[in-house]
Image 1 (tube, rainbow, N blue to C red):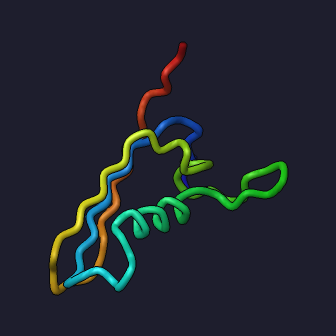
Image 2 (image 1 turned 90 degrees about the vertical axis):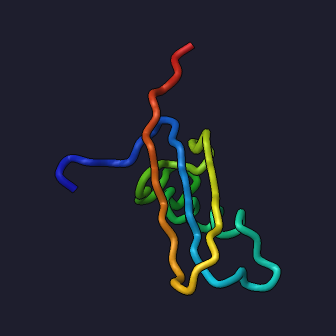
Image 3 (image 1 turned 30 degrees about the vertical axis):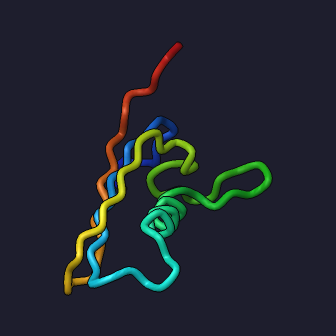
Length: 87
């Protein structure tokens, strides 16, 4: 990882989902929630285990999800690390 690690600060996430159509009874926010759960860590009682981008998805302060009709199925996720707001 060359000295890189997850952030404890706020993040912005943008997701573009491409597919011919949605699966029955699945919404765009369901895909987004699954992606955010993948990027954060697994929580134990007193610790977070192996977060990838951020500790918890509550750190996502800005989220935008888009759907594009396409024969090619896939998604693009962009994560922007934001400056912590000090009060």
